[in-house]
Image (tube, rainbow, N blue to C red):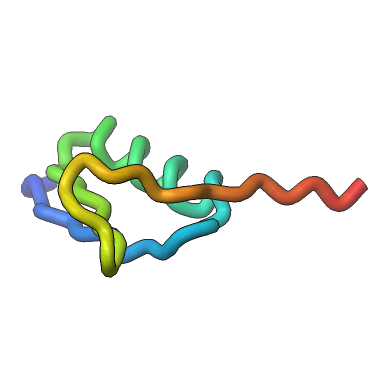
Length: 54
């Protein structure tokens, strides 16, 4: 499979597993992944959430 460059567009309080699992799996198989959030600068953090509905 050819390496692809993939850009994830995310926002504050994104569900943690919805972004991290696909991001890490795509990196693991050799793709070049980046995540950006409107209004954030390089190196800024994005707040994530993990919902537990028990």
